Structure formats: structure tokens, C-alpha cells
Length: 461
Ligand SMILES: NC(=O)c1ccc[n+]([C@@H]2O[C@H](COP(=O)([O-])OP(=O)(O)OC[C@H]3O[C@@H](n4cnc5c(N)ncnc54)[C@H](O)[C@@H]3O)[C@@H](O)[C@H]2O)c1
Image 1 (cartoon, rainbow, N blue to C red):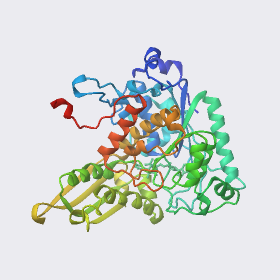
Image 2 (image 1 turned 60 degrees about the horizontal axis):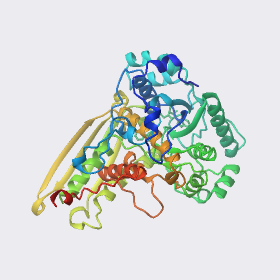
Image 3 (image 1 turned 180 degrees about the horizontal axis):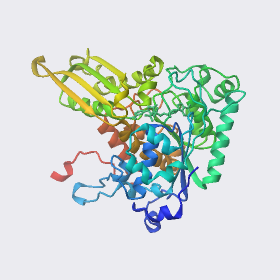
């Protein structure tokens, strides 16, 4: 498992907050020591993230798309001219502090896995080859019934699921020691598991542990990693639409161990565009009669989603977005009867370079119809990698913040997810701009700054 050498550190161009800056973070504690990132699933997203962090550290490229690295936050009144960078406003770990490990059912190290994923070009990968080659996958917890389209040799054996969870806990402890990491975060970048509903084994920690002992079939591999992480006091983010930490047992464990959780399903590509456009239509009271979304993609994620069970998990996550944003119950004339269809087609020649088409049927004044067509030639993992980075840094911040570490679900991170987790009974907020305001206001709140409401009447007194 790789840690960064001194010589690599010397070439880093991204400036870290220096110690005198850390002293000015108010009540928030600055990060000390390394931050270890544990990644179940070392495929396209994970390798694009890790390779990207290393490329940025070496000054080869810039962290485009990362709110923690590029974003600013306005403070006080518009006349004050205070807009620090987010990473200078709250004490986030620096990129130089990150160390990585992961699990996968395939034995490829991160260089080989990244080469096969085909997202980043050979020229870039060659420049960071020795670093990526040192990150080799630990044996995975895997159950073919949960991901039907793939199978691999690098899998743990154990007498029951509790035994497998113990093995993952041992991996975590071993990595903590070997890397010298002061703090850890787990982020699921594994394949989308088949669709399951919450069941009895998910309802409490006690029932879940009994289920682990008895090999309950409703306990998915991703839940075994999540259980092991939370038991070790390690926060967990879920980048796929699987239930994983979105069950009462995990909410309980997260609060008990002061290990924050968030999910589900990174908001990239078509859903990102959907949550940008739909709030716009609603804000101008334009009606919607239909939204047809189809994709072609050819990466391994596409292959996994070719299985109806895994697709169902993804479909549920993608479909809920419009209902929540458009609120048909409040606007029956505009959104009471729209058709929403989502299709994913596995088409190998496309690789990671997905094409997402949207046909949007809207209507305006007096009900006159109009159409909008969107053809997004996107790169899935290029959109997902900065999300992984931000989630790692923000979850670490949450765990170092007394007000956030014991609350379980971090709803303020909804901005990054297709299917944001919320407290039971609360509907999720899907509007990207409300989500961003929630995120930034949380940061302002943590630093004791005034929340921004955009009322603005004070400028006209
Ligand atoms: N790329 C995006 O834009 C995006 C957006 C939202 C969600 N996601 C989700 O993120 C996940 C990763 O996407 P990707 O494109 O990297 O897929 P990928 O297929 O390239 O990588 C997933 C990896 O997980 C491994 N894996 C599967 N089950 C595992 C297990 N139990 N333990 C350890 N490893 C396991 C696979 O072998 C594979 O290497 C998928 O679930 C995908 O749906 C991706």
C-alpha cells in the first residue's frame, strides 16, 4: 500500500494551509497527520480519483470540478468583498496528506486498473506510474448474487459474514498502522449491487449483527465494508445507489461511533444536468409533460448495469429526482401528469465516454408545447473523481467537528448525490442550487459567520 515519498512531496505545487493559517479556523480543529482513504472498488472512478490527486500534487494538472479545491465562499455583505477559498475558510486536509488503499475482486494494481478503465491517457498515467503501481487491491468481500455480470479471483473466504467483516476490520487496522494515517475515510466506489428493500436484519445493530453471524442473504457485501468501517470509527460515503448505509442499523452505528455517513450515488452526467434544468423550469412556472433520458456507455459500470437487478437499483435512484424537485402535489397543473423514463444501454465501443440524450417536453403560456434536446457527451469518471475528493475531505472535516460527528447522516453533502440520504421522514432536497446553499451555509455556520439568505433589503435602507 502506497504512502508518499519525501521526494514526491518536494514536487507538490498545491499550497497547503500553513500552521499559522490553521490557527485562524475559530473553534474548528485543524487536521493533523495523514488522512487515509479506503476504497472498496478500484475501478474507473477510484483510479481516476487517485491518479488525479497525484497528478495535481505533482503539478501536472488542476483539480477542476472540485469545490473544496477551486470553490470560494462569500462571507458577510456583498459590499464587504470577502470571498475566501473554501479550503482556506475551513480546515480541510491538504492533498499532500492523502494516502490510499482499496479492495477489489480483480488483482490489478491501480496503474493496470486505470489503464484498463481507459479514462486517463497513457501520457498522464506514465508520469505517475510508480505511485499507482504501489497501490494493490486487498481481497474483496464479494457475492456474485449481488453483482451478476462480473466475477474475480481476489475474494476473501470466511465462515460467515461476521468473519468477513472481522477480516475487513483487520485490513483497516493494518492500513492505519502501515500508512501512519491519523484519520481514515471509506468511500464505496464498487459496482452497483442488485436492488434490495430494507428488511428485518437492517433494522437495528443487534439484528444486523445476528444477520452477519447467520449469513442473512439481505446483507450485501457493501454493508459488510460499511459495518467494518463504522465499527472502527471510520466515516463512510456511498458512491453507488445500493442501500449500504441507508438503513437504521447503520444510522445507529454511525451515531454511536461518531463516524459520519452520507450517500447515495454520485450525482454526475445526466442527473447533474437534470437537477440543473428542472429547478429552472419550476422557477419560471413552465410545465412538464415528459422527460425521456437515454444513455449509451461501454465501461464496466455499463456492463454491470446491463443486469436488470443492478439497473433497478440505479433506476430507482435516477427516477426520484424529478418528483422531488417539481413537487407535483403543489403544482398539479404543471407537473401532475408527466412521463419520466430513464434508459441505460451498454454499448462497449463508447468506453467511459458516455453519451446521454434527453428529450424534454415542456409547455408554456396557455399550454403551448415546446421541446428541449440535450446531448451530453460526457466522461463519467472525470465528473465523479472531484466528487470523491470533496466527500473525503468534507467527511473528515465532519468527524473533526463536534456538532457534526455524532449526528449520523450528513445531509449538507446532498449536493454530491443523486439520491441524498436524509433523516427518516424527511424528503430529500434535489435542487442543485438549494443543495449548494445548504452546503455553504453549513460551512458558514461552523465558522460562526452569518448565513446568507439573499434577502438583500439592507442595501436599500
Ligand atoms: N462514474 C460515474 O459518473 C458514477 C456516477 C454515479 C455512481 N457511480 C457508481 O460508482 C461505482 C463505480 O463506478 P465505476 O465506473 O468506477 O465502475 P467500475 O466497474 O469501473 O469499478 C467498480 C469496481 O468495483 C469492483 N467491485 C465490485 N464489487 C466489489 C466488492 N464487493 N468489493 C470490492 N470491489 C468490488 C469491480 O471489480 C470494479 O473494479 C458504480 O457503482 C457506479 O454505478 C459512478
